[in-house]
Image (cartoon, rainbow, N blue to C red; front, side, top):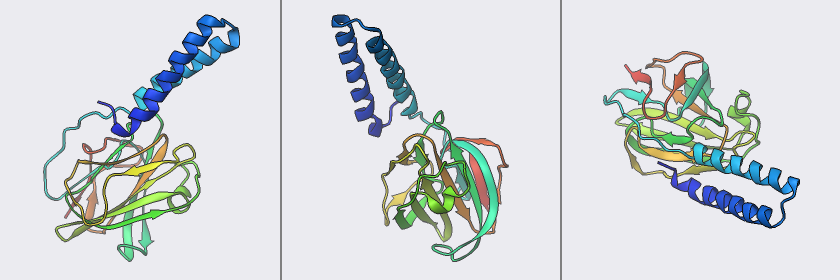
Length: 214
């Protein structure tokens, strides 16, 4: 399955490849052949990048699912001033260009906070990205329990697409957006959440249990 937001890029890439192949047949010069090969590899990579596999969604009203595929690169505590307005736990997931980039909802509930924040494009694995980079920030009220997560652009990922807005009713594991190419997702939990993953763990969006409300 391919993400709908990737159709335009994929089709355009393969049309360019086809045009270059035709041109190379007419004018068989080496530089044109190299360019055709490069564009073919790029087209195939985009087909791979925009894959959207189905996931086995765990059930459980207190479970918190991963919103993204990637690697856990940070677990700490910070003062969060915008949504929780108190000290919370934070967990960061880094998505390389080889990870699935479909984002998913971590808990069922109502989106009670949404903000798009303009910013820089620092490399997503750099922890400065959490504060400085462009991002979409989403808060969910899950029957009185709250989660905040941020979809963060990276040095390559300069396009964040979200399909949800404030007031939407959402279900854990459903798709909520896409970040094009390498990026980062930060999650914020209240202190009563028991985090069930560790640094360097590989996680899958909508499938890996990140934590659980006590």
